[in-house]
Amino acid sequence: MEIKTAEFVISNTDISKCPEPKIPEYAFIGRSNVGKSSLINMLTSKKSLAKTSSSPGKTQLINHFIINEEWYLVDLPGYGYAKTSKTNRAKWSKFINQYLTKRENLMCVVVLVDSRLKPQKIDVEFMEFLGVNGIPFVIVFTKIDKLSSSAYQKNIAAYKREMLKTWESLPPLFKTSASTGYGREIFLDFIEETNKSWMG
Image (cartoon, rainbow, N blue to C red; front, top):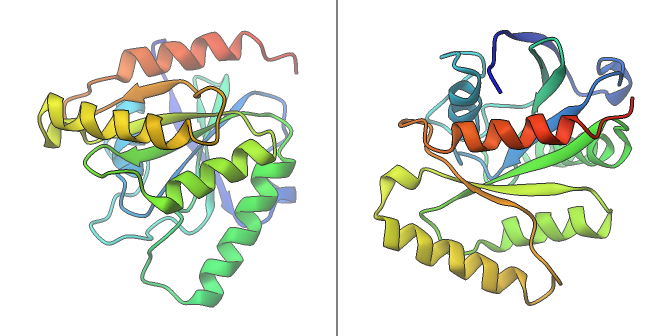
């Protein structure tokens, strides 16, 4: 897939104010500071489409971007650690849960996982929430340029083992690097293929 246009549409915390669900949608989410904004900017080839920050918890809204006038890329707030109050975190989790369980054109949740880390309880629990609610998702391992191939392969293998304790089969897995562009074409091809099943 070639990305010709990528434009910001709207930010909000109210699912009823999201764009009309007339085209397929992909929601990006992960632990705070997993490199979500950098990955979105790499995929769309726009340096500042999503706001990047060295401090976790930058994204606090549901952010819709329209890609090639054909599908929505949605940047969701990170889960887990963020320098914000418990009240704010509870509010975020409520509107994120509403969005994930009620958004009818949501084709797939893109769960970002830091390839440098061993399986994190919060990631595993979030994916179990998706599974229990029947929400399709894929896992994208980020920052693979930050360590050796054998090191990140070891961490990915550990994730697979951890998940297979409770899952019969695993979702599609992707490996990416926002700084080198690794994994961009394979992931965009996946979206292009998935869009073909949209019957909207």
